[in-house]
Image 1 (cartoon, rainbow, N blue to C red):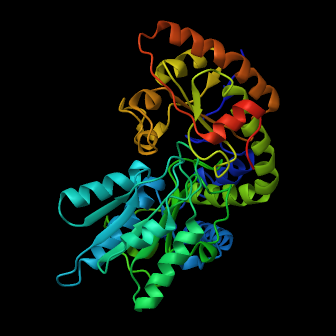
Image 2: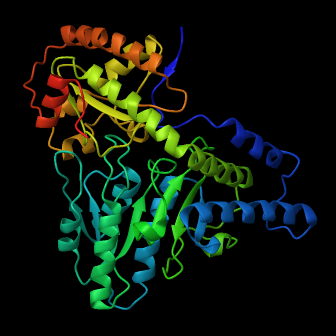
Image 3: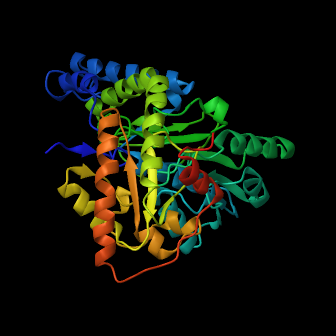
Length: 414
């Protein structure tokens, strides 16, 4: 039985060129970059070269690239680092702004800081498509606001946020008041290798991405920190990474991440167009199933993301049934798969608990073919029909005008 892997938003396979680039640093070139002997200097050069390669893609300076263990640590360093630095000022008050559909790596540290009364927190709502309004962001800014954190593209529903517009509005707010706050952070883990990461165009002060989402290794990530931004570390030790992230550098991971990012940039335009056709074909095919709904914006979304709620069934059961047929998908975020709670993202766009529990995320990748998509379109209706027959729950379903067009005309609005 052929395996069709449609869970690339959870993680991706390592690109062969990335594996080749990493391999020597596991054995032959294994030294600690902090060592002063020739082997250590060789490892240090590899880290320095990788840092430059990544900085070039982001149009940043080399010393603005901080290596972390992944997206979660990067997000936490951005958030807690800004708060800790600001709170060193006597009587400092910290207000932070985020959105209701952020990744738990952003929402959870923010909620904990708020619970401990270390910060005031504003969580902005999103519209029915998962979009955050730049005007709402600006309206929420206070004189005490130190950080705004809005993700670039959502990991569950794929909606792409107007990050450039939000960043521009925040910059204008700061210039008008001659202040360096609030800083602007964006979690770009899902956007890396797909969307433009030019930090100057995005007006980002801090930006997060990791290796596992762009055909690189797991356990490695980056926090871009603009030179003018002051951070305090969240962990202490040997003072690596400008003192912001102590610990022996993951040299194979760093080398692999740089290679993966460059490969993704080279493939980006062609792959974006290819995936877009597959995504729309899959969306149109699956929405022919009665009582189904596309979650997220129909067009302002990642080219590989299709998230659909199938009413009157459980998403977890569908994942298991599809897996038995060789199709591997997920119910929302794999990062929260241990929890059986309804997706906070689906709930935030106004959908019911039933719709959240019936949502399935199909995330395509480089190995996905049109034949794979056609096979999925043939298999999914039968699984949905079987699970609906087993379910005692029947609920009403609402649609948006964009979905009506898809269902009636068999195409997406452009």
